[in-house]
Image 1 (cartoon, rainbow, N blue to C red):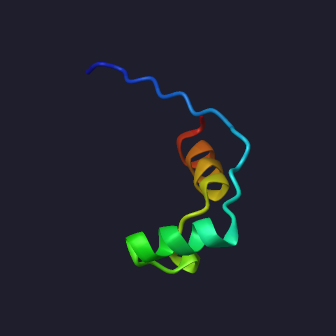
Image 2: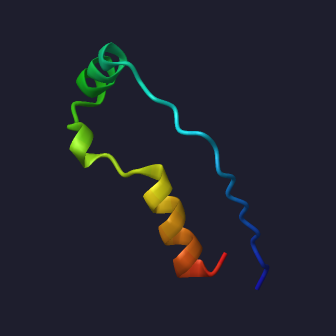
Length: 51
């Protein structure tokens, strides 16, 4: 089996203006509360896969 290497970089979060968030919400038709926070996902992957 071939080993796969994955590198995850921490980057500064990008904050959307209220208007930009409204546009995004209307395009994807999702509530902001349904989005997965990238930092939480990053932490979860680090712990789960011992990265």
